[in-house]
Length: 70
Image 1 (cartoon, rainbow, N blue to C red):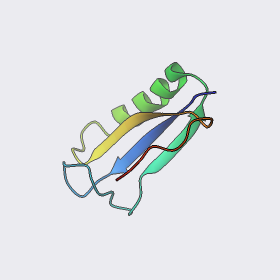
Image 2: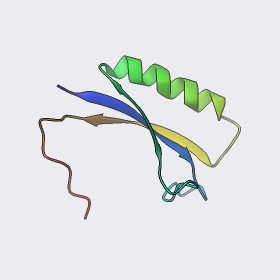
Image 3: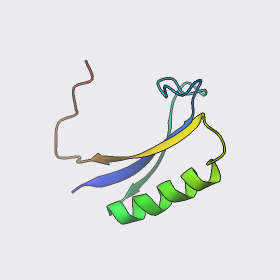
Image 4: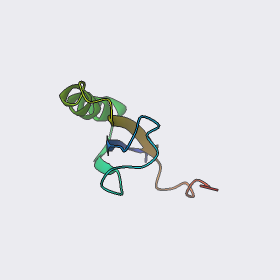
């Protein structure tokens, strides 16, 4: 069964590679994409004026093996 997560936070620069806290915040899991989108939208609009803030939706399936991060 798929799960959706909202991932993000504040980053050091607009390349969005390194989070200020050393890790990104994860919100969820959500059972549907629409529920995750509503949470994403809440975070995105609350930080719309800060160019170092970014959020995205990640889809994870616990039955699939983890993605390769090499």
